[in-house]
Image 1: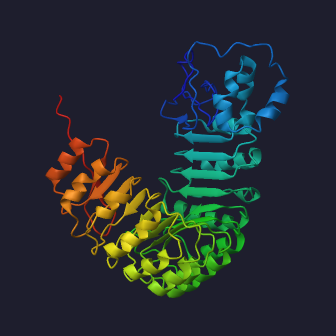
Image 2: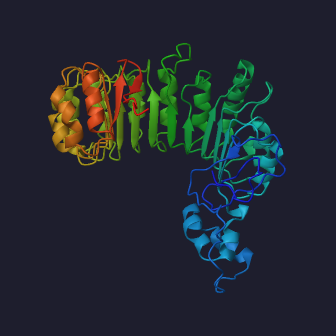
Image 3: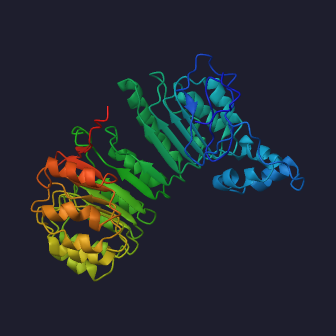
Length: 471
């Protein structure tokens, strides 16, 4: 948190993403505001709260402020923070102008709404807006629609309001949205339902939307996917993952999935989809997207080897592959696909629950991407028990999950950190390594994060730590 040293009486502080802006006193804010309510940023913070002034004016950089603003508007946040502000005092003052700010994040329900609206009014070129734990999100969104016409990414998280409050009517006028994320907060059922239904209705007015995350949303219906497919024709990233607790959520049918993915096949690059209940035609439609780079098919119980081989061989730009619970895939499927060199660029592989894939199939798969692979999950892969190839070849591996994979050699697991120095996270279960061995490994390699998996079918993991007895 950045604050001016002479303004200790300030009730809240301000940090603007990417700009070396000193914290200003919010004179118009609620006097009851606390330090827990704040504008925060994690992009390129530059501490200027000390009494030392910026670099002295050299006399060679005294262009008019309007001219400098026009020049600085073509620079990114990093350049402004780390280069421009160090030239002279005049440039430092101009770089602090709110007209150059591109990102704002408001956090905390103690900040006065008037103060936030005034801040939005002063930032006409804003592109990223994040609202966390705010009391009146609808009011702030209306102000954004009036003053910030260039917003591309909007994030609303845990914001509260009245029961009749929904996304304002003016939101459709913002046609530049590329990324929208809405997470519910402490609201009544009626208010939450109203918000989500209104949100889906407004998606039809976002033709430039590039990324959409609809995961863990029990209000999603098939007609909402149809709305997205018909109107968001530039969508590149779609995420729809359901938690195991959402048993009553409406299921997506094959007909819905086929229409959705065929409508967007020429734009999609990243797909993270829960395929529970979907059969062969849906998988064929998903894998027919030619520009896929990140492919994640969760609970792919009905993905057959024939469709996987025929369609995946065309995905030349594939960088991440996640296939969970794909119990119909066998080692031969990966053996035949390896000849097409479709796996050469993979940096992430997740085969959790693919219990029919053996060490032979894994070895052939890793031979193609061993020099680039950083993430590997073999959770519940019952037919794999040999880690020697991983130890000897995957030197850049940073994450490894071998929990509930029967027959893993204990000595190989213990030697993993010493052979793979880049490994930062290892997930095991009690059968793979006993608790005593885990503690010994944690003591020997403290930088390695060890996780114990308690469930074979759900993500139920706990970190292994050593209690500090120094007291």
